[in-house]
Image (cartoon, rainbow, N blue to C red):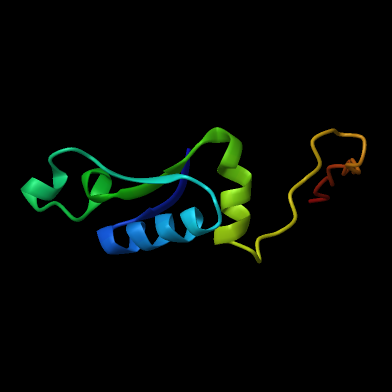
Length: 90
């Protein structure tokens, strides 16, 4: 699964190295042929860092430690608030 996207190959390897230092196997991927064509923008220029499905959430927490707390898996702890639509009195 993709945990990081950049347009810099060295940056992709730095991020993958950070994950691997935490015990998460990571792979840097670039579209085949993009480097040969010198493309650095758009989909062909994207460099992605990939991890296994099992490591996805842990990798995100390592890369974005200040991210908001994730919602619980079940809906028992979620508060459901319904709003009434207001009518315009014109």
